[in-house]
Image 1 (tube, rainbow, N blue to C red):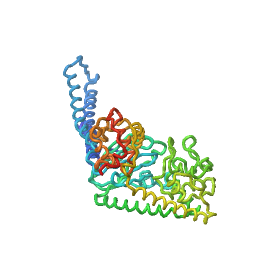
Image 2: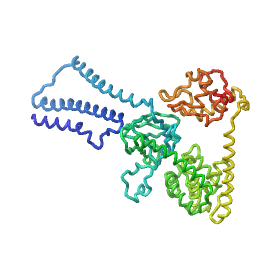
Image 3: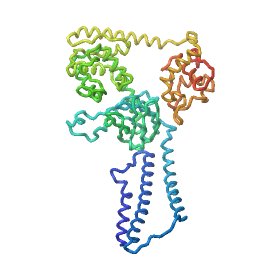
Image 4: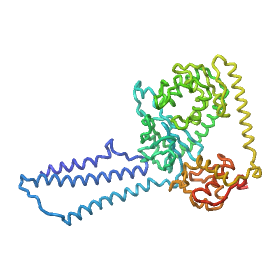
Length: 526
């Protein structure tokens, strides 16, 4: 009998003792937090196994040795004080023993203070957008698994549906703070190796952080059901040594300069219809096929078909507008920052000529550049049969763009004189300030000015609002190093900054009565 009990004890203890090696168990990860989460998980597992061992052990023992066939007679007692105290005090002690380490771990997980690097993560259907604060680096990260593997025409790779074109690059041994939001629906950024899983909600910003212990490639996924391609929204993080990360930053700046030069050079290029279609097909399959389908048929009632659609048959400028600027209220995103001018020209050309559309239109990069520059309608694109005319149009567009850039540089070089700026009434400042705040500030400080406790300060009766106006102007113009507060001197005009400062100092019950004028902003620091 004793041998049976020993065997039963070994079986019951084998599960928790071997849990660390089980493929379906939680992993220890590569961060201090993930290790603490793992230890907490295993501690609670051991406690649960011990409770189960005691409870089921007593049950089995009672069924064997206190059964009726052995002549056992049930005890007859009611409301035993000792039993009542025991089954109240013992669970209480167990819960306290579990709550103390759990609370410490949760508090540590929610403390993103004193971060060395801040990255804004924006989810959208179905890709991630990463923006490095104070580094002037941002890019989109999309699924790179070949369509042939997804369709079952090729053997699936080792990292099927867990590979991207541009991974998020992070340094090890540095505290990295994440600010997470969304452009459309709720997403969730989840990397198990970091023990980071945080929802990205449209109109709100959530915080998380990590400090990676060792270099490597770490993978995750969107963990919130966000639409039909939810399963095609992977996360890949490339953790580099601190020296390699600094080198990567330098490479990214050089790459940006190279891409800018290539984009400028492409404005003077004229591609054939075949070349545009070939490149456009690649862009379409990578960026558009998820919604509009590889055959352009779309999904009835959800995503419109591109076969003979009014947009394809209509003017090119309308097609340019919807690809570049998106369509509010729908899933159609703006691709102005996601694709180069040449890629936009190529994919529009492909859409206007594929699946039997056969418009013969060849949209050139210069057409896209002209549209981006002027915001007006571009001339009808040229076809391969009129190459000479295309060259002339391209040259004229390039000259116009060059002239416009030179004029813009001259305007920027001019110093705004405070005396030349208008004096606005309180009503005018508040009306304009509310618009600027809603588009520029509300994402962090919330439309109500209440901010997000621990992440973004409230503007309701804050020291900034009740303090000197000069301090308010300074933080709006120059930002606040080490925080998510950006410098808006290059993003907003003096009038816009004056209006939003006036609005913040008088909205939500602040009622300071102060009307900051554009001249106050322009003369600040002089």
